[in-house]
Image 1 (cartoon, helix red, strand yellow):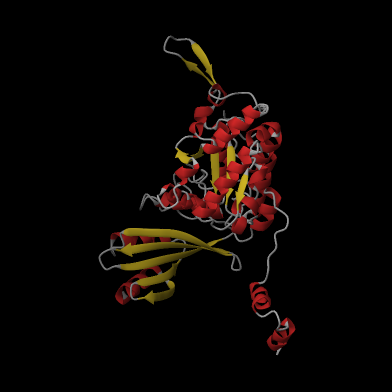
Image 2 (cartoon, helix red, strand yellow):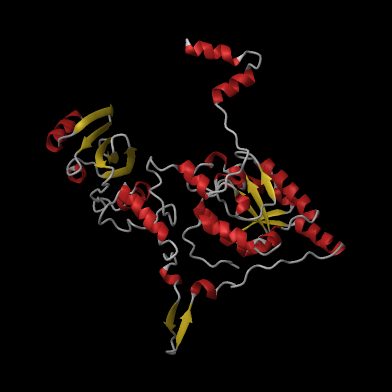
Length: 232
Length: 186
């Protein structure tokens, strides 16, 4: 046992030096077909090296009109993170019919503007969630579904699930419950519409303003950080 | 089943043989003989289907208990082979050559309990939790609550109640709680 503890301590002290970058993502030189040597850095070649910037809202009626339009077309990223993801498929059935609220599911983050964090979020999934969230075009909204996203729920003392979602990304609407039924989710959509229409759905700007703080919190729990700081 | 137990127990010196049902037996084997016995059961006794492999942390005894659960599809019986290994020096012979899927179990046990299986493919890679740098998280001396408090952000205002007293106060608010307590003491 002592050996294991010593190993853990040794790992902790050399953590900064240890790199989790996968071999295919390492910075290296590649020989092109014509014989020239090209420097390749896969992590940064395909992503923006800059931080996200704040987009100021328009003035007066224009912003009101835009917000009305945004509220009427909520395109949700089809990404189920926890047990709550089973509550999302019924929304798209005739019984609950989320289409009448202007809600629809999209397969990729580039096509969607709302993210439902459905239930408990393990650190492993948080990494993928951040990657997807940062790829969504702004303005973007986050709906936190279930108690686990509020204070950890029944997994509050788990070693692998986060407790408070709002420390890692801005949250617009919380839906409490374990699990909330699809009706609660619909009520959440209505609430989100109210928030957007009143001009308070500024999650993307909040993320850009406090980017360093959010990033520090994310890196605190994701120990094998092998992706760019901003995945746009 | 009885003849099988008699046959095997003399051969491999089985201890604590427990027949739970007509078709389910558990028995302890010595660490050195365990993989031999698994091979024998597979090749000669017809236990050709590997059901699962698991581990229990007996921290009071300083032991890990490994379980190889084998199934005989012809007689529809199961045989659980238990092995006790030392907790401080948790190394076990790998069995991935018998069934290929065993190396996945062994990789999981390496991460969750820190049991080493030398020679097992990809045994040192992360299995479920990525980038874990603390002690193995399924060991019983790992304090998961303390780890969560230190690592994640606790939201204030979380309360927990004793279910018995809470429900009693809620259902029978007029009845004093102390009266019930006295009864318990008597």
